[in-house]
Image (cartoon, rainbow, N blue to C red; front, side, top):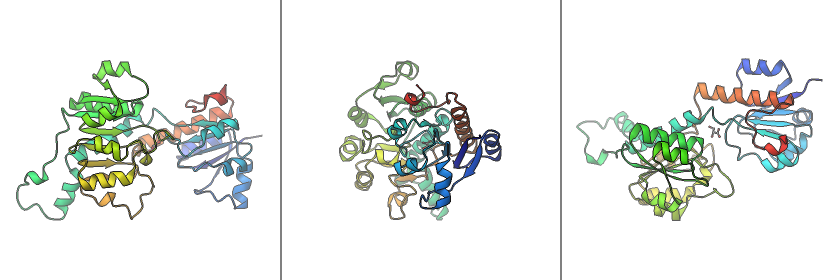
Length: 324
Ligand code: DGY
């Protein structure tokens, strides 16, 4: 009997066909309405669930007793209760590696855009203000030769740091649970405590995953540690920064600017002042959003699902315990 896979995200026709060679494949749209009998009946027979941005709750898991694997098309899995999956023997797979360089590109785009006021000045031209040469009130800040502080030094953090050190001659500081001697060697990066990094860096770039420990890691106190000339970039998860404290810091000149790809609530509420602030570059969570990378992520999720349901070890397994 073929196993059943439910797709709740974007797959190419080829990727879907690949799954269909091995499994019965059905699609469900988000958000799931578990009160719908057809949704309930599909979940009750599902062995694999593949998709992005899925809100996985215990109610959903209770409705899917045959589930063997959840393959998220993302590297982050803060929307999925990993311990609960492990307890139930369900494998969780994600998509690291394939999005590292693209997400680092987004981080660097935000560093450049905020420092050189790219979006603000492009808007300024569109509004017809360019009547004479610009003056110091519209000048930006240099990026090259400055100090880049990486909060989190995993794959994506290291890739941002590599761009800074090798492309822009930046000095690299990082705060991370474990030291990274190879990167210290390669980039001259220095590990330090978070408060030291915040006080010293011209650019602070956040790349830590969202966990109970990192929620609001950057709040009023941390923002106050930063230089008034410093720029904060977040390509991790919105909730790592206390957004209310950030808005106040940007309004009061505690820090100079922010480049944000992620927000506490996504899509961003129309009430949020952030996208309208001149010293903010706000993006709609585009970290990995290129055709090539999203395709590679979906392919990784397809491969993970296929392997897991065929009794083989998936490529990117988050909860190793289930495999053991
Ligand atoms: C991820 O994969 O977690 C990214 O945030 C998606 O762009």
